[in-house]
Image 1 (cartoon, rainbow, N blue to C red):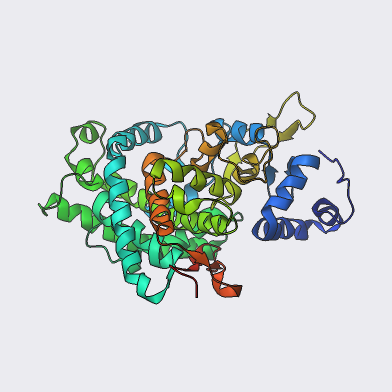
Image 2: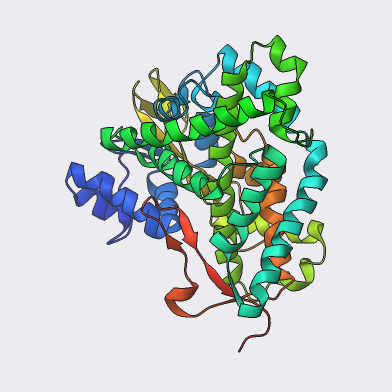
Length: 420
């Protein structure tokens, strides 16, 4: 599609005026600096943007079409994941027996019945971090609150007791950066993935072997369930497959949870008119604020796929576009959740958004988040507990998100209690 932007000095005007190699860099820059403005212009004037490196889809219907056609739009993450984990993972497989069997088993093991227990644990871990921080009058939402909660849940619920928490981030961040940002399969980034992935898998394999040798742990954590399951053995899910799945869950949980908590907190602080302190008294009242804040400012703004056959997206509509085989396709979740055709007043903070829109936080199709119910609890509850301590934004750069080189949040410091 080649519709021209209708206003002067818009993103599309600058994009069209740039040389081809610069066009991709401009889009990537604008996604980091003003994704909402960029996506709004694209939805209005060029909802399917064909760039020299990828095709970007922005409308709700087109995003869900791409993510729901797994036999056409395959996962792009397989090379990075296979390199890191030393074998195939369900996130990098499409329509085969590994995805079908192992995803089903994980859905059974990550039981919805665990949500109340997990939420209570997340709240308890959050209170411990907040109690420690209260005398200082401030807390780092990323590193001092949400990361601590996510790591404790990894230890006690997922089963990673004995793994050094500092090692986890050292391993996870380079691998996720390769998966999410390495659109050109840069060999140096892939080499780093191989190095840290080897360390990660060595540690997880040792953990699995220790459990097999009879290490005493509560039987309710995920790793113990997998090792004791007759279902898994019937599916030829040996210890190596268990180790790969455990490492994959770790990759999808810690940084995603911490990044989501940090993003939603930044968004909530922009709305002092909201009755967040009162709503925090009740999880059912507070949670809608969490998901609306993340709709406006999600951590993962896009999901990446590779088109394996020529395919026409939005067939029969004015935006109909044929995507050639081999094209990388970026499905813009953030844009889809602000699509005016699905969401009235998309820039407003409202608590009546339809569930099918908010569900996009966890993806859609055969690669949606396998533990999304548990993720909801462990992201929302620490922020609810934080609002019971009267947080407030710090002025200037100190109160802004500080990101690492891969773009993931590292710090967001807020005040606690009475303002000075």
